[in-house]
Length: 69
Image (cartoon, rainbow, N blue to C red; front, side, top):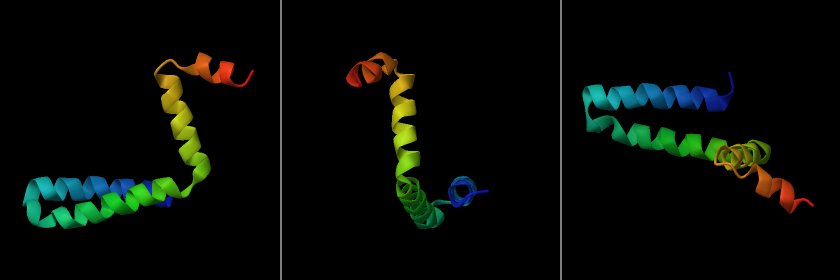
């Protein structure tokens, strides 16, 4: 399990805690969100992969191929 996976799981647990026990725990969720986003940005290859995956999901694969010709 990667650090990013651990942070994703911690965010889910904290989201549950906030919903179950109240907004007093929201600052912890905010911190986990910030750490998760920072970890996601940390790996340029993973970020590039996400960008291209999202680009292909909206049907723009042809535009990517044309831009390389």
